[in-house]
Amino acid sequence: MSQHAHIHSAPKRTKDADAALTFENLTLGYGDHAAVHHLDGTVPRGALMAVVGANGSGKSTLLKAVAGLLRPMSGRIARAPALRLAYLAQQAEIDRSFPARVFDLVSLGLWPKRGLLGRLRQADRADIATALSAVGLDGFSERAIDSLSGGQLQRALFARVLLQDADLILLDEPFNAIDAKTVRDLVALIQRWHGEERTVIAVMHDLALVRETFPQTLLLARRAVAWGETAHCLSAENLLKARNFAEAFDDTAPWCRSESA
Ligand SMILES: Nc1ncnc2c1ncn2[C@@H]1O[C@H](COP(=O)(O)OP(=O)(O)OP(=O)(O)O)[C@@H](O)[C@H]1O
Image 1 (tube, rainbow, N blue to C red):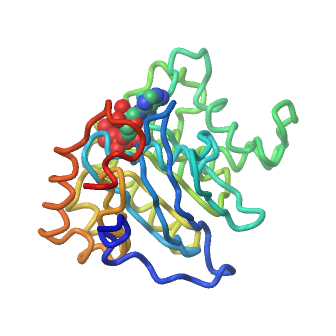
Image 2: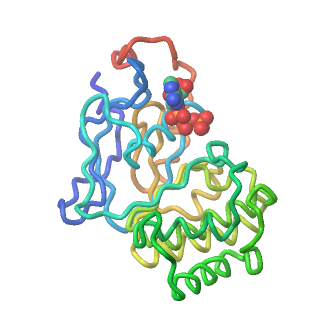
């Protein structure tokens, strides 16, 4: 059976002008081990989409490739022209020991506008203060980032994304080890971005939160098990299918052996 037969609800091909991203027979991996196989589909502009799947199912790999940090093994990712992109990595990948203040971390969000060594203007300082306030970090500007709690650091990173003013926002497990209040505040920010017609893609583990918050979902198990409207995508049948694929993962398998599964 062909790979693509598994994608029961892949989004219909959207006109290019409406697409933020298009995946064409995209295969991603490391060395000669593929982590995401033969992904096809379109993320429309303004979509609010969750990426879900078991550990090791390729979610972070997909985000990294979309962010341009990983080259495809084969196939391609087409981004809308002049798309401004913001990528928030998993917290585990962020170096907190770097001697910086919250202000410095957040001001990096202005980098696309001001350049790395560009001098901040008065208006920029006001924008940074507004972004900190929007994430509930008033008064935190001078704090060292290594003194923040996990939730406070995540708020600061969301403030940086706010300043980036991106068309496409990629969030890798933004709510991992974050308390309920902070999740609510940051979900509200994601909904605001959605209201502003930005495209948001988030790797998520909390399926209840996905059902509440994300209209679209991509269910991955190294391949797309289902992709489309969240309620349909996360049906019991699809989740079972994803679990069965996940149990069959073999990290030592050569490239694409699982295709014949
Ligand atoms: N830098 C790397 N080098 C080699 N293999 C990698 C690398 N990063 C990820 N992998 C492998 O690629 C596969 C997919 O990993 P990925 O991190 O994308 O999964 P994930 O769905 O994000 O998992 P999790 O939910 O645990 O974060 C895994 O088998 C993983 O071991």
